[in-house]
Length: 324
Image (cartoon, rainbow, N blue to C red; front, side, top):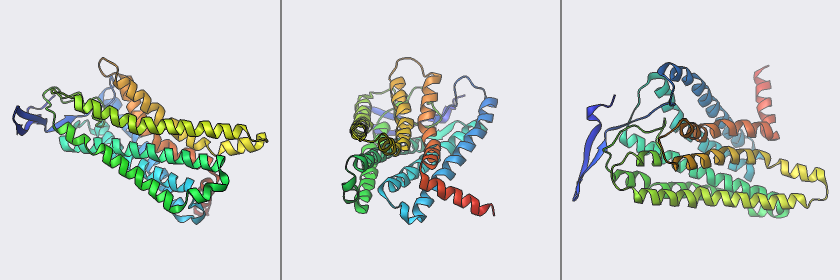
């Protein structure tokens, strides 16, 4: 039940008073009762533990093993760091929601979570693009790989990914604060997203719509195009190799990255499409959003751990030592 103190005047402007809610209300999965949500919290806890341990293991192994201080693994460490923070931003609040049924999230806390989700997603997209560029240079121009992707260059790419994600998405909380929220207070997911909060406003949201579309196209749209173009060039180079064995060996180095790209971009595209469809939020909306945010931090360490020989052997070595 909506509490009467959820609406508070935020500030006075010439045309009236902006009304900001003290809280937004998060929801679980539509159609499921409290008991089902309670039991779903335990698999969610397991996913969070797997994401945390898996990504921490990736970071520590790459940090300790000096022979893994190569561009591909350094980018993987960046990806694991982003996934670790992203899962920590979303999963604990979801677990609390499912376990206790407490739906409230404070207005500014919701905006902060929203900013982190979108900014971290943009950073992950940039790192996936950098990893595609690494594979392109390694396969298409192997003799130039060491001179192009030097340590300082990798650090600059990482800094650029961090800066772009922060700068482009930093305005989002402020353009949401310029809106009044005099409709319902319930967001349609278990976490805060820009398009979700924007729909709760009863004032003009054209600035939010235009800016949101601009950043999604200029960030994820451009990144996905360049990743696709990189793989077109990679496939062409692999196709031109004289030996089928050499071609398969070269392309096998891209399998883990391709899996990470698909796990990230397919739910993102699906979520963008369903959010622009008319009508009330459906189970499809919620499932796509959950897959988009929860799956990559869990799947990426598993995929890279299974497909990358150096990381897999190091993990086996650690477990074999502990078993003695």
